[in-house]
Length: 117
Image (cartoon, rainbow, N blue to C red; front, side):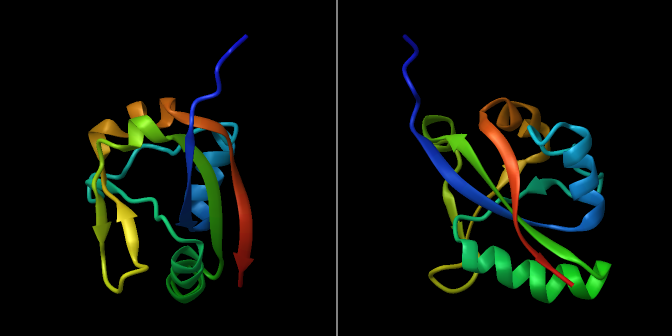
């Protein structure tokens, strides 16, 4: 019998290019960051992810998606929660060089939960 590890739900506002790369990775991992993107930042609040996808991704790409995924909570404890604005504007800052390790701790598939155009 396997023991189920505790997970934390995270969200990520995602543009169409990044979403295509997630699809190519069978919905199980985030693609490597670009050189000008030293941090991967999933967010801890669905409403915040919706705001970014709707207000930023749509303006820049014509479409914005909100993805939801689970990560092992024990693994996430290494990343302090960053308050990027108001008290519900909460992110985790994962250094780009740690993204492979982060991906290895995703439980299940990355799911698209909202789409904005």
